Amino acid sequence: MNEGERRESARPAVTGADRLPGDPTREEMIARMIRVDHAGEYGAKRIYDGQLAVLGRSGSAPTIREMAEAEQAHLDTFDNLLAERRVRPTALSPVWHVAGFALGAASALLGERAAMACTVAVEEVIEEHYEGQAQRLGDDEAELRQTLEEFGADEARHRETGLAHGAERAPGYEALSAAVKRGTRLAIWLSERI
Image (cartoon, rainbow, N blue to C red; front, top):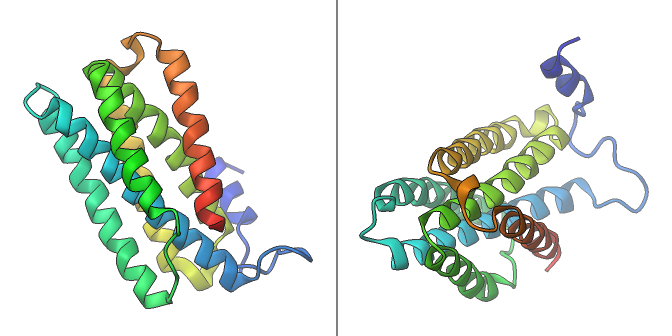
């Protein structure tokens, strides 16, 4: 059995059918997914806004703009899903508005490679996050699963772009990457719940 077949067999036939007592209901699980993904795409857009505020005339600006446009398209999709599914956005949006921009600007102030290191760290966590969500969705949520898989593939491309632009050669790469990943995971946990 190859990796793809293992993932397919691990996926529940119906979303939430494998839940245990005390787990969120199917509806709560879907609402959390949409809420956190909306928050994540909003935060990513703000990170790129911060990077562009600092690096707007640099050689990496066109690449950053291209990634920012993809994040905006993702955000637009989740804006629509919030309305269609009647899911409230995270109450932390004002925090992510400031924190995302600050992270983007701070990483860019450290240089283009540090900005790309920030991108690599964030996108690696988000790619894994989308993959985990997609695996929990059954055939009854095939359209949402496909959206998450497509967006996860976009995030993987952004990660690869950051690596191609010298992210790993940024001063303090390991420490910067670890800090950004921890912060991203905390933002995910908080945004699912608040």
